[in-house]
Length: 271
Length: 315
Image (cartoon, rainbow over all chains, first blue to last red; front, side):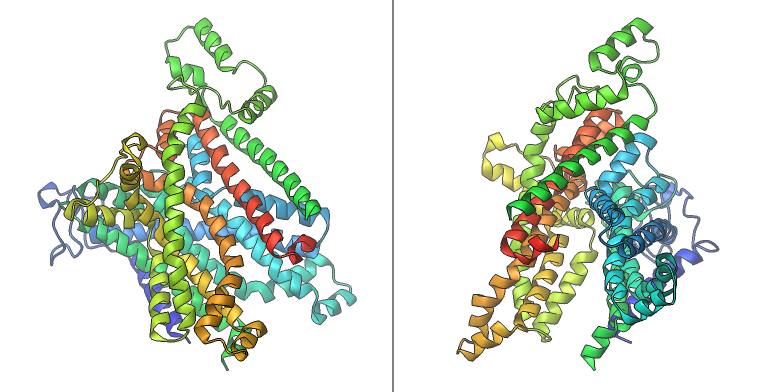
């Protein structure tokens, strides 16, 4: 196993554990106001200090991890569950009008950056974590569709697929039984990358007020609150920022490590 | 090439048509009547009807869609529900901040990424390569709006070299305008520079393994000469594609950065419009951003096909 994978998995696990732990334990109630203890710098009592309402930053970071992970994970889920079947279908019907329709549709969705989709959805339905999930999820669909189609196309030329066709299996069955398991590694790697991009996108959307709404803590929202206080309480901005960076860095390193581990061509090249 | 260009142009027009239809349809789903929103709950029915007629809201949705598209083709985006001024003028005023910001960021990103990528590729596997790759890995992970806040903390609040926010205006001179946009552009450029440096390195490494590079070395060129004369030039093709695509991301990304620096660009306009439910402005800005992305993709495709003839037959 590569160092990237170990370091990435360790960082990511730490964040996931913090998020899971927050369901049963946080040092303080993340929503409890304690004005006399406001804007405390990190110390023994409050490890990450307190915000302008005296809320414990460590507890907020733990609960905020929940929001980030949930939004990014569900967005990857939307992208995969719609994008992968679309990519498989396009590859199975290569060159047909259906392939053309799917790929042109993909190009169109690609023209809408997730922020633009979020602006559209928010303008109509209002801001919220669910709308952030939908916006990031829609942006993920063409990513998974393209990568699945690309990988599936080369597989369709292979002998074992020819054999399956000769055996009388239909395109849908071949896609599900032979193509999908063979592109799974690629999808896991891409899923990790999209997950990390989802964490960044969620933070950005929450920062501009299009993501999770108060009182749900989110790292992006914490940064937005910190903006006017950064001159006298820089820890309010530093801590959520570092949390985002470490999470994204961990996921990216894990993605790189997984690619090295799962892609046989890289393995062969190394040996 | 002409056939390929025509095919791509047709695809461009179709994409724009479908995108406009999607944007219009989504905005149409929005609950509430703009006329009631503008005049308040106590407005008389005849006043509301008159305003609806004035705004062109009293006709069928199909007719409104075609009126909107026809207007846009002539540069008329309608009239803002809130400010009662032409949307095209509001957008044009804001574009003078957002567009230079995106271009400035693109220039910075390229200026950082090229040397970093070339340096890393020429030192493959050595300490310099590891350091550059480590820095780019970090650069990709940093949210640009957070980096912007840190830049404000260091360069505006502590060192006082720049203002923490606001835009001086181009009427104060180019230098004053660029000075106001420097911190936002640096913040916007960082993650893109990290991505571009990685692409540059990877493209160069691919090229370095090619036969013509070996031939160049065999003919007596030093490694450095071969890298600069043949490697960099050939690696530019994929890199330029990424630069083109990054421009549209920078334009959309400037929406968030404008919030950090209180810049009067498209981003602030769109958020103000969302909060005041000025949907015609939201609709127009979104269409403009999508147009920019589709157009840049189209131009990148054409430029790519012009450089690499194999692509013309592939699509």
